Image (cartoon, rainbow, N blue to C red):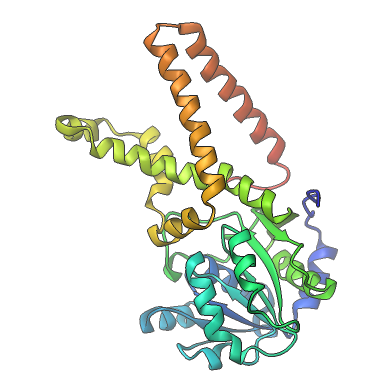
Length: 316
């Protein structure tokens, strides 16, 4: 399947989406940054016209989610959370999604839709299709947004606004289910696009996974600067802060992503390794022109990307 055009926001499209989502009962499994932001976004636009239940790891998180208005009701009891849900939104680290689904499955009603915020899609679908009955549907999703902070305290009703939200259509769900999930996403004011599963995982590796690995590597480089570390810290400015911001992200989530998108991530890391090797050779040999061209080409391409995407969605 080829990529679809990003959907444009309009009053008519938003009004129709809100109308279609009214009356839905949504269960958010993992009311953290992403799950909490989804709840806040939907409640901000639908109010009492949507009923949201939530499940969190701790009693304190459940209490906070209710206090913030991200959910109407929170519980650690899977039956209480999902028994009446029309949509179940999985927002846990990827490797926790299967055990959690197995725990929820006895209580999920026929015709319900499971969707998720997982950053890798092939692994989740490969595992889910082994256990899902034919009358419970899965639609893979991936909101391309986030912050370096985690937990429901970091959630925001505008987290999805103008961000890319990928929906993967090739999981066998009926059109009505797909349309409902798309309308739910539209209500958050995210920009929808579609990719097939394999392409999603490759693209997510380049755009999201490798930058996180690289940001963590830069922090690790600082830590291994031996006797220079304290002096380096005195020099640390905006460049270091900007390029390493995402290294403050949730380590459980990123370990799971690396374990469930191994082929794409390792292939791209090897490509990156090769690029850095070329730069090393150019610097060691004193080839100023090659080094200049390396930076100039990257600047030109980055500026072009920002120009191309600014009308479609906001890069994070």
